Amino acid sequence: MRSEDTSPSKALSMRVMRLLSLASEHGDQHLAEVERDLVQMDVLLDEAIKKLCTSFMEIHRVAELQQEILNSVLADCPTASGQAARFVALRGELDQHIGTAVTGLQFQDMTSQLIGRMALHLAGMRDVFGALDVNGSVPPESGTEALLAALGSVSDRVAQRFSELEGVVRSTVNQRHMESGDIELF
Amino acid sequence: MSKTILAVDDSGSLRQMLSFSLKAAGYGVIEAVDGQDALSKAKQQQVDLVLTDQNMPGMDGLSLIKALRGMKNYQKVPILMLTTESGDDMKARGRAAGANGWLVKPFDPARLTEVVKKLIG
Image 1 (cartoon, each protein chain N blue to C red):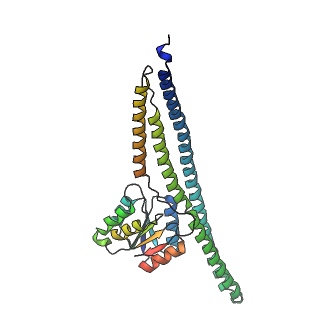
Image 2: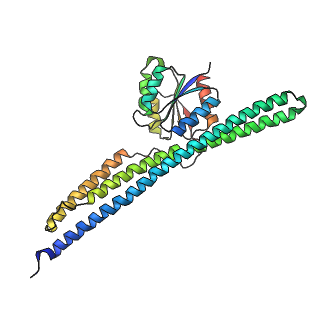
Image 3: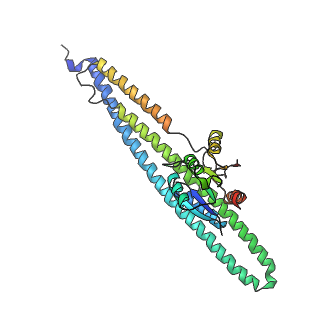
């Protein structure tokens, strides 16, 4: 005589529950790690960009001071008028490069928004993995019907979480390059 | 006396770059971290131009513009949006809220100061 515990439907129920429980646990763990790395990356980028900005501003400030000194030196040396024009041209070049750097350095504002959006998606996926865990909601001695009911409930929760997420996570960054953006005056 | 610009953005590095670019062009700059902070600073000190991001925690850029336009002393002050968003629907919403222009990030310091100069001298 076959024991109740080893009937195919109960064994299937237990295996499905075990599978869902493992998927839930491991999925959540992996996503938590990805989330942690993204947050760390955002912090590092933020710190790096602030340092770079400060350095560029200092370069600009020092260049201005140099220019002032050069102007006074050149003013006392009328024969160096050709050099004065060259210094002015070089200063213009420097300003142009700093302007290009300032445009490029704004990548962090965009990556930060993208990382924020990724974090929201990850949180949503972790909720989905959480919903997969039916351990406890279906007693081990239950059969296929109880499992089907539990799976139906899981499907509803997953669908609901996805639709909630769709409404919240709107894409706000569509830039593909770091060229300066359009300007439109109304 | 130099004109004062209120630069509103939740990104510290973006505020740093805006401040640097505008100060280098001779403007005074007040920084705000979001719409609510901007509103509070705009009440404390009259500014000549507002440059605001759209997506910020708390009060966003469009809500800030609407709130400023509701204040008597900010009805005519130029307000520019500076945002990553470039959709026509968002621009239309900005225009309806009372923005005078829409600048898509990233900005070029020379082009930005050119626009500001055109609006407030």
